[in-house]
Length: 154
Image 1: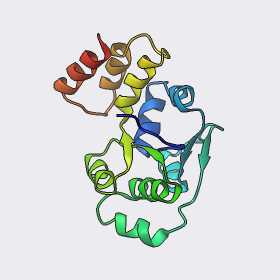
Image 2: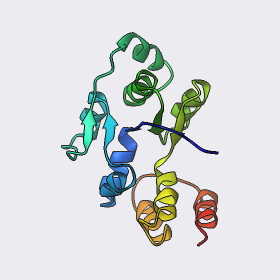
Image 3: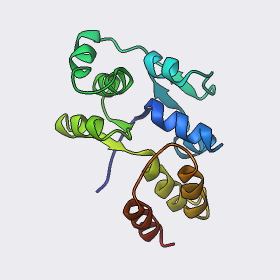
Image 4: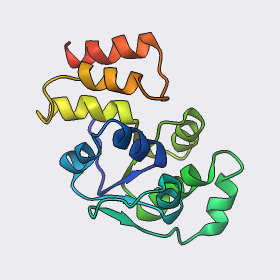
């Protein structure tokens, strides 16, 4: 399925995970500039690279409604995606993905970025990065690990 987007919006978990494994630059290599919200920048807790642009959500009322379903960072990312239009959201939380589905938003997860990076030739193998991720507190099943390797042809 061809997905079209004008902007990529990352949630906190993506920044945290890629930072923990020293692969944050992979986001920049994949997409160029990334957008996020001030809420997410605060949750990340470190200075973000210059290629990450922080934009405030204009409709806080809508964000507050979304916070009934997901956390504040995810609600801000989803709100910004709706306001921006044609956005690719990077979301790892299942509840946030379900909300994005209901709102017909395009999204991927941090692990999906690895497949895209290999497809574009930015990395030669997914396995070493998945193994680094396994040494963090980010959890995914053995089946997900195997599925990603299968799709990656490894």
